[in-house]
Amino acid sequence: MLAPERMSDLIGMIYDCTVEPDRWPGVIAEICRAIGCLSGMILLVDLHRSQHRLAYGWGMAPDWERRFLNYSKKISGFYGLAFSRMRCPDGQPLVLSPVIKEAGQGAQTIYAELTQPEGIAEVMQTVVLRQAGRLAVFGANRHEGTGTLTTDERAIMRLLVPHIRRAVAISDILDMKKLEVHALAATLDNYSAGVVVVADQGRILHANAAARSIFSTSGAISGAGGFLRARDAQANRELTNAIILAQTDEATIGASGIGVALNDSSGEPSIAHVLPLARGNVRTRLMPPATAAVFVTQSRGQPAAEIGAIAKSFGLTPSEARTLEHLAGGATIAETAEALRISTNTARTHVAHIFSKTGTSRQADLVMLVKNLLPPTRRPGGS
Image (cartoon, rainbow, N blue to C red; front, top):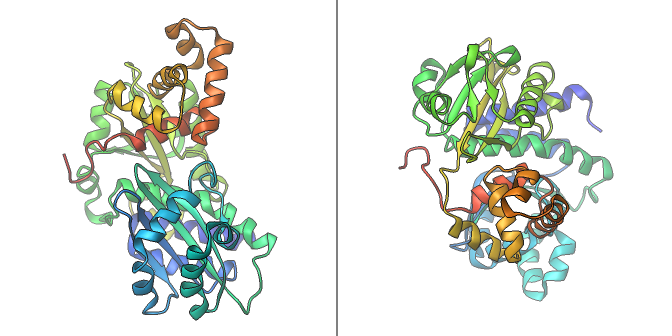
């Protein structure tokens, strides 16, 4: 395993990429070296258009990307199947060679054409962002002269993946734009997502225009007394814990503070992501006393018909679909049972089936899944 100091340095580098995205190639190089890989990439896959592209890469041969992109349609279909939630839960690294063997002769031919000229023996990839019809995948390639990936190297990757997921999710909210330190307030105000920069104990240092609007209207989060608080008690505990970890030791934050489900007074769901800011030369320049930045995106209340389409796509029964509608709106199991006039035990059974069919395990993940599958709402620079 890596020394704690080395692991901490790697995690800090990953988070610095949210502020300066051009750092990704160098950080991918450091991650690959830490797990004995010769090249790596962040791949964006558009499942609807059967297209993909490399967002960032390191160590690939100059003509490899051209050859890779020639297989866009076939590879995109493979990713849609191999990286489904049921087969590959978010955050779990997947070694591709066994999957390729199961995929048939066509997949094996393409895989060989892309890996053998580079001397690649193993490819390990994991989903780091999942949205409606779109995946972001982090991949690392092992050279045939290095041997197979060891248990320790896979364990290192599992420890790093939650931090990569957080950095990629926040970069996506920011539309991969560089945060300008000299004009931070104006830069943050350009984003439709709410952004709150906090110090210790959630003390607010800056809230952008979108966050101030949430404070005054929805109640999902508030800035009462100058401190950031979530309306929902469980969400508040998750946010508070993530902010504390961001201040004390960002390497231990793991999945805490990724996709925290928030609910406003009307029951509409929002999602919060916590970015540590207390470490590293890049992030600490943004606002020196800051501990963390909290990014909040809102669903804007999508109609039940669209929830129904999602339910149908996962094969939910009508009863499970009605349960999903309430859960996605932020209702508790007890509130859902009361609204549907069913017993709490029956509601729990429906929830267990929904989790199983959607590949989720908690309501926060389910809310995020529904939000990502609904038609896009206002995005940075959009309407």
